Amino acid sequence: MANLPQDFLEERKFMVARQLRGRGISDRRVLDAFETIPRHLFVPAEHRISAYADNPLPIGFNQTISQPFIVAYMTQTLELTGDERALEVGTGSGYQAAILSALAAEVHTVELIPALAERAARTLACLGISNVFIHVGDGSQGWKASAPYDAIIVSAAGPRVPPSLLDQLVDGGRMILPVGERGGQILELWRREGESFSHETLLPVAFVPLRGKEGV
Ligand code: SAM
Image 1 (cartoon, rainbow, N blue to C red):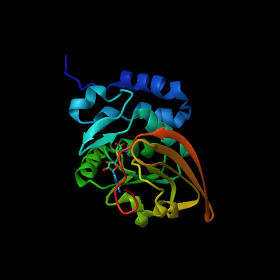
Image 2: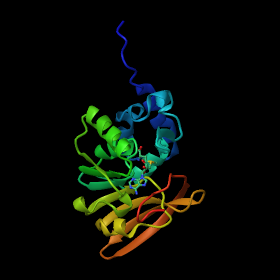
Image 3: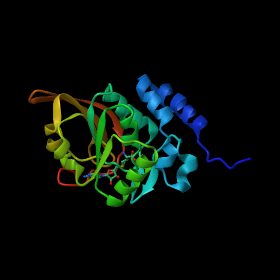
Image 4: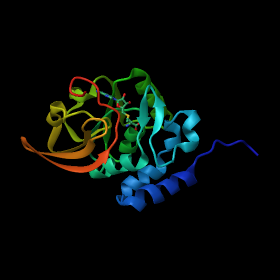
């Protein structure tokens, strides 16, 4: 029998049922994206077997791919319908960007570490994902060249909300991000209405630091 590469479909379905649906993720499009995107291709080979576990995993350079539930929770909160231009800060492995690619029209993602950006670009290309644009730079200042964005998701935590990111939201736009120091971070959801902004706090999290001019 041919030695076929493992596709981890059963593990993926189990992850969606237990970790996502079981904890209140109910947006059908979000659940479908998690069932489709092969998370194991976004983690280093030595962690592939644990790719669908209920925790973050190392991806090198002292960085991590976030826990599936947190990726799903943040994604669902953005209430994407398919027409949006989205920005992600902190590409890392490219997994969150791949999930967003299935839910929005166009995804821009910014990564500070060039080697991670290159690896993520290769993974996305292998999967034939063509609506994600990876940029290398300081995402704490957003990515002005493609602004404004309907939705922004920040995958690293800074001590305060970067003003540039608020600036780059469209009227009616939403942004989800972790805010706070290590050991005391909270996910916050921000909304723009004209020139005013409102926000709510959601749940405690533990992200790697958001570096850069408007980060730590
Ligand atoms: N979303 C990623 C994924 O799906 O694999 C995980 C992101 S990891 C938790 C956080 C990432 O943010 C790291 O890759 C780190 O290098 C990056 N980062 C930290 N500060 C940044 C900044 N100012 N601009 C862009 N990326 C930054």
